[in-house]
Amino acid sequence: MPASMFAALAFTVALLVTTAYFIMGSIPLLILKHDTPLDARFVRGFFNIYYVAAFITATATAVSYAIAGHPGLAAGAAALALIAIVLRKKVIPKMDALGAQIQSNYMDAIPGFRRTHITAILINIAQLAAIVWSLIAMSR
Image 1 (tube, rainbow, N blue to C red):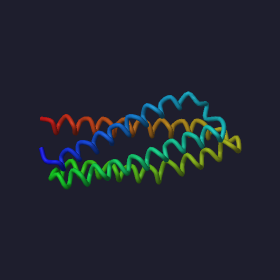
Image 2 (cartoon, one colour):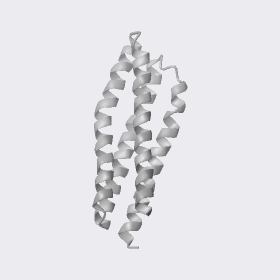
Image 3 (tube, helix red, strand yellow):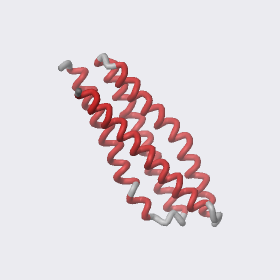
């Protein structure tokens, strides 16, 4: 197996660990009532860090698969990097807006923030499933 493939697999593991770690960290945050601006800021910061980490690991994975000569896997990892950018641009501002509404006691803000939080978790779970599926498919 060429060294470039070892690098690609190492970055894939890093992407897998990053995604799984943040899923396992974000699900327990659902116990927060999301009724204070501090809760909203913490959850928002957690997801912001995840999106940056996901972008970095997915980009490194895409580049390493491209170098290893696996364009399909490189495209899939690049798609995950793109998804991280899009989600960061959509989810983080929405969490910021809802967090500000929580501070001003807007009644729909807390359920809206929880829905955004749950949606982000479900998207992360789908990404994890895609990564695992690609590893299984590649091993055949």
